[in-house]
Length: 151
Image 1 (cartoon, rainbow, N blue to C red):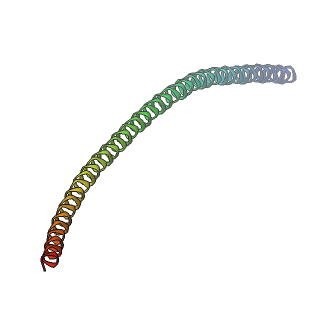
Image 2 (cartoon, rainbow, N blue to C red):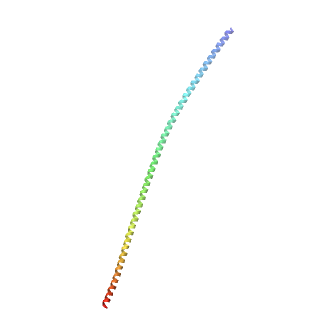
């Protein structure tokens, strides 16, 4: 009886060991499945976050590009307006220089006209003086000839 009891106990122990092994295997398999599911869930979350960040990054790139284009356009307009302002200033400066030159030319022409008039007046005055002097000398000469004739 004791041998059969021992054999029964051994068999029961083996069955218990098998049950424990089966439970441990089941628990280990469940643990692996949980970990696998957890990793899959984590990977899905990572992929979702990556997709969201890539979309955010793309939106930021597009916004940055738009801001850059807007800034470039503003800068180009500012440069164009500044160029127009400089051109207008140059045109005004050229116009003023031309006006000043024309005014100077007019003054010089007026001065030449006055100088010419003054010279003509002086020449006429000199001519009149010479004519008067000539007449006086002619008169003196004529008088001298008359006196010579009278003698």
